Length: 192
Length: 173
Image (cartoon, rainbow over all chains, first blue to last red; front, side, top):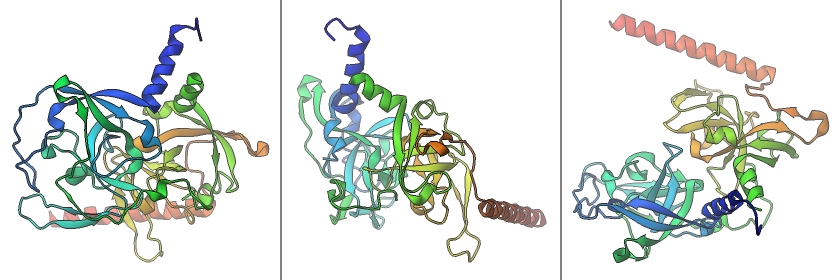
């Protein structure tokens, strides 16, 4: 390895990028909450933060399914397989979420997240490109999640961690656990 | 180590297929197969391929199923009780329809719906372990005769329904 060819190091870098952590650019507008759109879409948030943020994506803890509700995650879009999106993980399997209707003021519908799925929402609401669980997808498989956004690296003025935050959609029943993701203690029907 | 990782993740990998859901093609006791990842990231998966996918129900597990529909296809699901007509489902954008070859004993898209393409990990192309059964895993629907009959019946039924609908529309016009 001492005098190894350069592409070997490229391979190592790729592996770290895949398994441990990577740096990702994301539009700053995706982090801004559409404060005026309570429940419905079509919010007109202040468009002050233009430009890109560099964020650190933790891919290691996702391999062991260590994530919490309210964290930002990087997931592969269920509609366009090659696209990665940053969304907030609102609810995990067996949770119940109150999904607001398309128009503000309409009655919220309670939906149950099926097994192995999660509910991911864009902070920017309808302005976010690529859709989210509330507007388009519905519950998505947890296996789509690739990483956890842990901190902002650039610009330096926004340097810091990103604590979990509540989202627009209310989680009604937090019955869900991620315990099923721990290694199985007994023989399970793992071909299902 | 990195080389091993990259090859296993992006080129080719051994995989043991356990479970009854692919019964005529693979034995439930576990067959060793080779899975290639190239055709997934080059978007070369076609209808009839046997694929390895991450389970939509439990992200720890992987499943092996056959692709029965790509995005935009109409998939016909016979009703589980054989009463009534069953239903026709359109596979949504960016999704695939997966089913096991063992129609009677398989938890698949009939149960949890179409699966995002992003969950696919590779195409199963070679069966390695029991050596007397070793060989290429073929694209296409490897069906028992009665299953083929069933599918043929469904296809005819669907054609009839469509013809009926067209006749109805013509009458309306």
